[in-house]
Length: 209
Image (tube, rainbow, N blue to C red):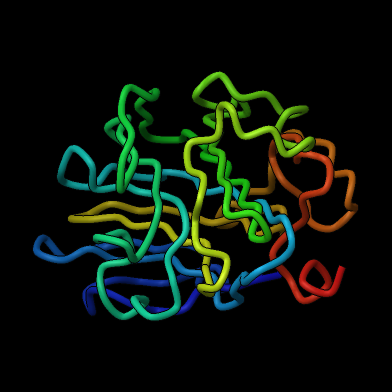
């Protein structure tokens, strides 16, 4: 399964196969970014857990970043798409549920059609349902029209003493195994919550499916 690469602040620790990011810098963000990317085809799912709150209202953000901006702020301008701790979405969207410590955010990205959905603790936001995501119905997608020519990476951001963990399919958040192991029709990856049919872990096996 995908692992993270280190970008952002130097005052940060990466543990558990680089899947857990703990930021001790009060001036810069740190990021948890999948080393594998998605471009032009495939449907992928991952989960992020907020371990410790960062210092600002929107400091935790989870979503995707493009290849050209991984060494900069992943969710700035047109470089990424995210669901933020304060209930907003970047680059546009608001009024979604806020999230906090121990909440798990699911990200479903259809790289072939440029559509994305998010869940909080297994419930899809914006009134989306797992069946419509599987069917490709975009009525309640958080983002549509994402470029299919860019290479996108699952990404998370934290700030000032914050900590986040990614589960790219290995079945753990840090050293803690998922509690329930949801249904995964692709049989690729172990996640806390049910994975929409047709979606898979971002891994070499998932990319080759």
